Length: 525
Ligand SMILES: [Zn+2]
Image 1: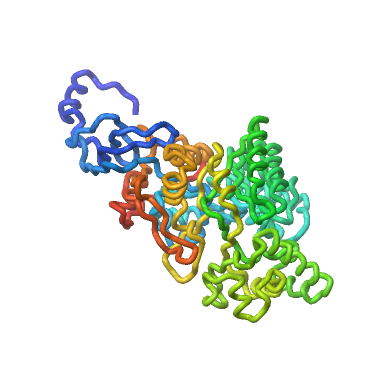
Image 2: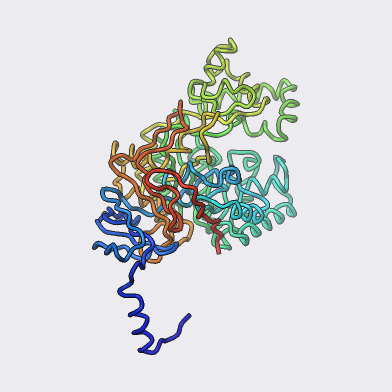
């Protein structure tokens, strides 16, 4: 509405609401404000009206102007955290998203690693209907569309197949995807050549999308993997995220110095590349990552046939041994830990070493090769791989283009032993890497969790703490905030995250999860 009130009417309006009585639904008083831009903290108050931030004030807001005042003295008030790499698959079973909300996450981006829902819009609609605790957004996945069109064929697409995939990416983008993800290490993405990905990324770019890449290799082939992802972004003219950036396996430790230099030099050449990272020295993915990808074409039926051929079996065994020694096996089978073993839950939390001992085979990489085959054939368990070096984690985190993202799966305390990142990513950065190790200042850490990912997603009114921004807000105690989950006992909520507001409604209140469901599915316009 845009009309002019006569002066008399204006006077009447002012008289009817004296100096904005209770103009704010909530005021966070005595706050230490860190606004997400990287600027230094200051003391003040934040007023929320409806689902928006109405005011960020350096002076106190009179209590009479608020329906509710929450005194957050001694606590940091920051924009809600944005998780750029979230495995949201259990969302319809866990719409409250407690494991994310209790970390201070108010917006999570699903569909990473080439995955993601399909058909796209119906899934987004059902998520919206489910009533969500946090806001979510989605990428359209390269692996998802390739599987729809070509199953797990290990070859280039025909012209018609490529057109079909391009049309699917275009549909996803039209229906609100924020971009496209690839998981080039996984089947079937591994079977695609770079030009296929460039062709599809161009379609996402045409709608203003981003490109997030789980690299083709993160171990011995790391440098090639980074250079391929940068090339895809350059050719397709699309903003890049090198997601969950890391250096896997001892021969590759230290190589983050090279990959970060590649990012810097690409940026100097005008290529828009950023990074995200989770703050742990272990990764988590399917146990089948220990199987050479070429062997997985056609699934277990075809794998059995290949294993019956002595020559192919020999090649598969050699490939597994190579991966155990130099990649996700880390050269020591104690580094491979089972998260969720459907066919033997007693192995949950145990290592490949434990399984070898239990089975009476030599507990060495050589001895474990047959167990890898057996494990994949029985149904590859979700697993945790302790194969990164702390120095790389710190170096990557400190890089100015690195954002924080969990790569975590929505979780509820339960039977499996998942990666603790599902519960602790954001508090761990604020506790371990800001307060204890001082890798980042608090202001920089918050920036990497808020304004940087918001900007990457093209969301001008999120990840910020100023008038007009969405009232997605996280309040935490910088002196105590910490992750509690461990690799042995991951199902533990963090401490120190006291209030989390999504659209102005508290999903965490005074440290307790509420039943509020103010979240929405964000669709790119
Ligand atoms: Zn991944």
